[in-house]
Image 1: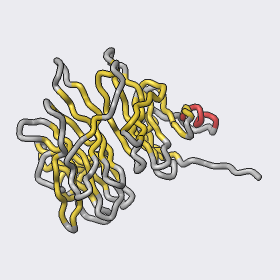
Image 2: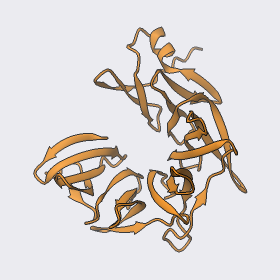
Image 3: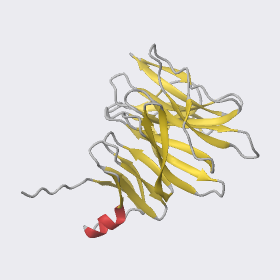
Image 4: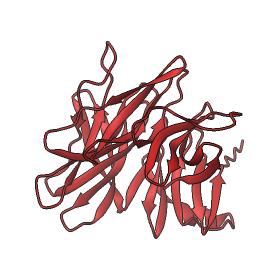
Length: 273
């Protein structure tokens, strides 16, 4: 997954672009090893953030930013990890995980450093994915994790993105294998799970709480507690339909794909007096 770019140091696979125009992902110097990496604007080549095998999935927009993703342990298990920028270096830390964890990944991070993702737990013939949140402590570092709540009928769930208000989006999977888009709303005592009403996944949320996601057949926008069919809106404007929507920006711009063509959609607001 990601966009493959040839570089002087090997093949760079881009996964995330932050507001500081730093591209994060992984760098493959040979066919067997992929290292977490970033490529700064105007730099001739990407650099690795550590010597561990793995990949950066996301990063926030702070001056000294944090990035999150996974590393691959000696036994081949994926472990959710975070990289913290410190002057000219990056400090790698493995995130704490529940007992009996056999894998996991960090997929989203907010500007205040709260990370979301999942941990796979081997409690049945197939691993169950637990949606997790990791928050930095007052003195720094990530010492604890929180498993987000789900209904009893949910077999697995994944937290994909989180905004600066602490709202988390992703999907839950029923015991029959059906995935449904969902949201975890923050409260004073924790998070509350909410079904978003469609099959698929909610994949991105901005600071205002606008969400995008869907499934292979439909793309949706959730905004102001309403759900909109993006292709129905595009049809009204005589625009080509979307096959998939991937992200929403802080100002409402959307990133998606139509066929083999990537697209950026900009919201248009009409004011009348």
